Length: 345
Image (cartoon, rainbow, N blue to C red; front, side, top):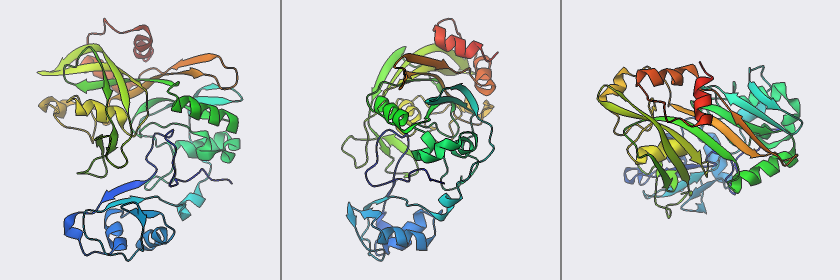
C-alpha cells in the first residue's frame, strides 16, 4: 500500500499543519549533547530514532546540519523534520464511520465530529480520518495523505474536503494557496467583541511554550502570514461574563489560527484547553469538553465542473446547547449561520 507523504524540509503551505517540530534550547542545557536534548523534549521518539534523523540531515541547528553528538551552548533554534517511522508502515484501512455529505468521482466532502484526529501522528497511530478513508475509498491509497488537502483540529467539528484524483488534489491545493476556498467557522468566545474586524498577524511557535502556537513577529523564524476576518452574530452572557458568537472567515489556514488570533485580542474560545488567557471565573461552570469551534460552511469552484459549490453543516448538540447556557440573542444571525444552527434542532 502506498503511504501518505511524510513531512519534508521544503513543505507546502496548503496543509493546516506544521511540517517540522521547532525547539529552542534553554540556557541551562548548555553543555548537553544534541541527541540527549532532543530525547528530553521529544519523549514520544526513541533516542536511537532521533540520532538516526540527525544522521540523515533531518535535524537542523540554527539552520545547519550537525552531528547527533554536537555539544550545545544554549539558545540554539532547532528544527526536526520527522522521517518515515515504523509506525507508518502500520497505516491500515479501518472501518471507521465517516459522515460523507457529498461525493462524486472527483471530490468528497465530510462532516467531522469533535475528538477525531485527521491523520496518524505520534500518539494517534490509528482511529483517524485517514484510516477511515483508506477503508471506505481504497483508491485514495495512491494519493498523498489519502487525498486530504486541509485539516481540522482534533476537537474542532465541521466540514473538510478530500480529493479523489491527483488532478483534483492539485487543483484544490492551488485554490487554497490562492485563497479561493471559502471556509467559515462559528466560534463562541469570552468577551464583548467588536461587531466586525480583521486580524492580520503572523502565527508561529510560541517562544515560551513550543507545544503552542502564538501571534509572533513576521520576522521570527518559522512565522507564517495569517489573516482571519470575523463578525459578531450574537451577544450573550454567563453570569457577569459576556459571550460573543462570531462568524470567522479564513484567508489562510495556519495551525490553531482562529484560536490563536482571537486569544491574542483577549477573546479566547469557550472550552479551549490550550489557549486560555483572560478566561472569566464563569468558565468553571461551563459543561463543555472542547473548544467551541465549528467549521459550518465550505465553498469553492469544483475542480472538474468549474461550477461554484457550497456546503453547510449543522452545529453539533454540545455547541448548540451553549446558546441557551449563555442566553445568546440570535436575532442578527445571517441566513447561512442561522440555518446551520437551526438545522441541529
